[in-house]
Length: 174
Image 1 (spheres, rainbow, N blue to C red):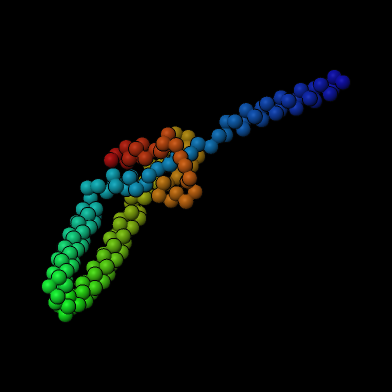
Image 2 (image 1 turned 180 degrees about the horizontal axis):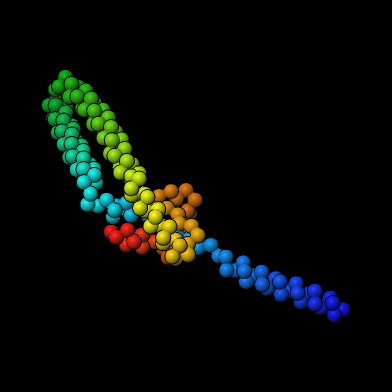
């Protein structure tokens, strides 16, 4: 009986010790908004100014083309109001062609801008510095894993308390 008590006591002690060990292995996660870090990193660089300039030029051209289409629509309505069917039909064809042009132009420019943005964001120098900074923060703060909010296929919810974006931006000296 005494031996049974020792075995039971030893088992209970082992379980309690095991719980203490396992409770210390809690995984600590963090998230980073890499888009915000990227924006802070490149905010005043020539490639970003070039990208922003191209984007503004593109928008200006789209606005100009849209205004021309509105004027053509107004002119078409005037032709219809005055009974000038031939001119109205001719202008309707021009409006259709211009609309197709603006759509194609917009699609091409969006692809161009997206490619430029992707190239900027995939800069090896930027990501190497980002990963080095993330590693230092993870080690110093005890994080087991840091997830990017941009690749959030598996992130359904997160607490703002685990968002270390501002810490990363500060650590990068931005």
